[in-house]
Length: 191
Ligand SMILES: [Zn+2]
Image 1 (cartoon, rainbow, N blue to C red):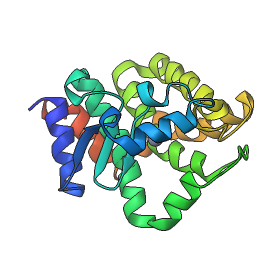
Image 2 (tube, rainbow, N blue to C red):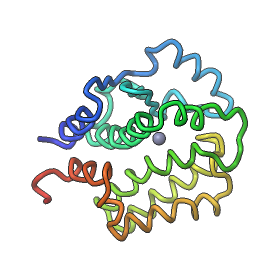
Image 3 (tube, rainbow, N blue to C red):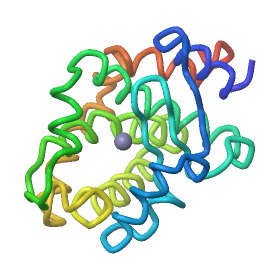
């Protein structure tokens, strides 16, 4: 089985009614894209969104390289599990922040999900890949992409370093859902 199939079957174990849609085809998401455009101009073209069973991709699912889609689904699975566990508290603390608050609960949720990206890159490319992804994540957390959710390059980098340390030590991969995500990413040939 290929990565994407393994990841899909993991996600479907948690979310049997998983739906993957192109967000450009959903009118209310297009409206949201217009509202967000001044702050996040590439909201419609670069960002995935997830609500419950439904993953809103920035394009047609067939357009994505399969491994990239597997990785996106793994990141979104963390959000789906957090949404299921925390319900309204997740959505309120994630979405209903009218102003950039510089230190947000949204960053807490995103750090849990970007831990997947850090873990998978570290698995594939070691320390060098981990550092590259850390840098990309620092910019995402500190900048406008998520509304300056953990503002300041240095602060964001420190905030993410805790997770990077857990990736390096292997502690993260001992815990679900990270353990099962890594297992689906690697497949049986690697274990
Ligand atoms: Zn996310």
